Length: 301
Image (tube, rainbow, N blue to C red; front, side):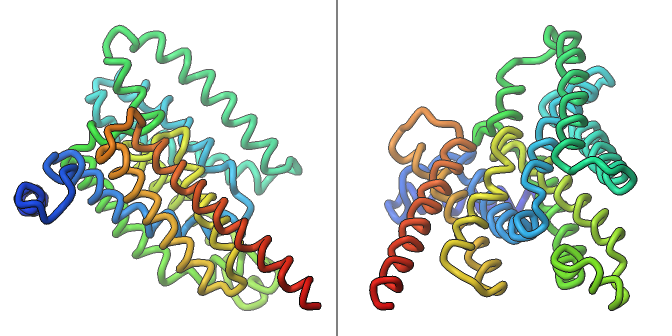
């Protein structure tokens, strides 16, 4: 795959030098970020519709923050602090599955349990970071928190591609079952859907996507990219098909624009923040459209 990435970079850089593409395409790290954007945009947009439907808004946020603890554990165990994927995936998957297991066996609400798990994870992570702060560059930790196009490597893209293929392989065949299990668990059980298994699979998918997207969007903002495009799509469509397709479109546009705009206009913005601001603008626009059409219908009535 690395040879393919290099061929794409060389081709796009040549086109930018010839004036066929914006000047930002002269930089290899911008092309890396855009390749990632084309992967995470549709995926986060599609999965985000399920997050909104299942009301799991804060779950991805807790996973993103738990990744910081995974980074600290990885450094303590001797992993590279620039690519501590084994520790991040391992800790976050354990965190997500244990959280879901606990939720199914207690009477506590989801937001309460997420708050408890998140608080414990942050406390452990903050304590461990004190021990590893002398070993790592603090800018690396900032990249995990807020995302950075400057730090996306071929390894990051390989991990994201592998996660994307795995999530698609799980999500596409099971999408209808997961949707039914989230909308009407009783009916899903009557129709033979294993509701608890679908929930674990969905938690696993969100965890994988969240960790894989940290380098682009950042731990603090990955939840926003799951929610805002889906919320914007819900503003302007009532059908499930339109909901999913528009959410994927809005998420992809946000990723691409968030990468290109700061580079093209030399703005001192992290990629994650720029992506979310573009998504927020789309949400505001769709909200205005919804309000305008609602008033138009009321006037005609």
